[in-house]
Image (tube, rainbow, N blue to C red; front, side, top):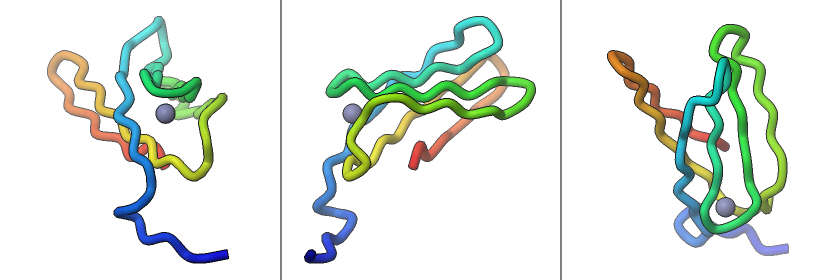
Length: 70
Ligand SMILES: [Zn+2]
């Protein structure tokens, strides 16, 4: 198996959205979804291809949160 440099990996930009106590990142290009709990930092990930780099940003009022989803 060849090692593929990061630049050649697929990258999907996710959209962050607050739903109750969770920040939910969803990918418009596949079925990837990651939720991060605001108080406990618990993370739940479903779907998506492990070879695809998922990045997302969510900016609640007054706070800037940048998350590298991988
Ligand atoms: Zn994706």
